Length: 277
Length: 265
Image (cartoon, rainbow over all chains, first blue to last red; front, side, top):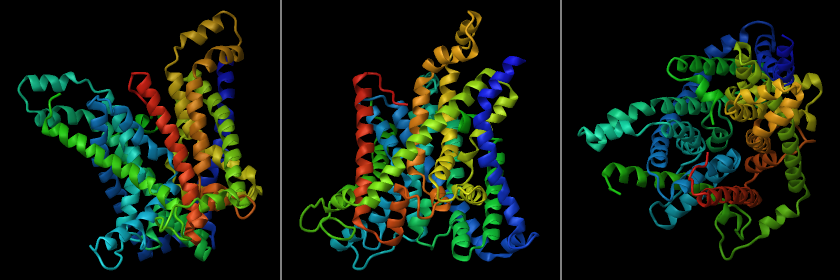
């Protein structure tokens, strides 16, 4: 018994700091949402009646969904190549996947602004080659946000799939091939089903992170593609509307929790979040 | 090796995707060498003027230094707290410890804007707005999940009988931890500390909410630079950051080639 107390004394400082300075303030947002500017559920009725809020939520889920699908498609190809074709360039490929992971999101978003802006490098190049005569809009719209978001989120999709694929025993595919299945059929019916846990893990990670993403949509969207996180800061910074901002935060938190709850039926949450490498 | 269509598809696709991942980041390099006063490719000749501006701007240098030392303190604090936490939970290994581990990774799941709003309101009551300590505390909380994940991963590979043997031979708990457990989980602690430093060094949303004028960090300067005027000095800063990452990545890749076993993670 005394032993157990010692172990808890080791765990407690971090846990206490987390609960007091993180969990408590986040839960407190609920308090702000029902007290500012006046006590009651006014902020929530306003939120549910607002067309702009609805538009923003739909947009947020759509962008998160498209980002997730794109990241899974591209990430699968990368993860498959890296884990199945052992060649001289495999370590290089892995290094190139990890490189953007270590460059800050801010710097990566800046790079995309430089590329996609009105007088950005892509527009300049297209005008120089005579393909277009006046700049086209590839930034400050959904397309620009999506391109940059896929770029930022891709490593998050690749890594869980990679971990999963490295653990797959190749004797099943070999057996299928030996029994006469074509390479494509062996991939589709034998290999692919085994990779689904990694696909779900990576997809959930990307989806949850995309739902709450702020930096890249705010910079690439230019105020025209307002995902919910940006909508919250907009309400607070422009209108000092803390109450509505807090109510929207609660809604976003609940949405995220629901996604996790539903996903928990298909995905091993422990492997996805607690034990990721 | 047989070249099947499936193989060719995956291999070519991968190189295209890798180009999409890496090349856009590299554009900051030529842009930083521009001889013009706006963002764009060099017109007449290459110029280091924007690096010069960075290196002679007290504001930029001070912000860089602030980010570095705050990151170092955050790395130390979160690694110490997180390691103690993980060792405690590892010994306990019961349901309560499992719940505690989930509590510790909540900051990964909560959207940055939401947690920053929470920080802001609470930091106002505590009088921590626009203080270095306030930023250090917030960043330590955000770094803790990454530290606990990597330290716990190291602990799961540790054989429980080893610290038990030390205890049976009469070592008190503190001694068993210091002499047996800590040395064997050092790689996990190191990874955790690096993660913590990067989390703090790159963090922007929280800083935007809880600081005003007293605390300027590097990401905040970059953010304000992008918002207000696109000054090529940002490209110079971005180039320095990208080149440092490139160097570290190149070193890691080179090392995995040297040690013949091609495994990076």
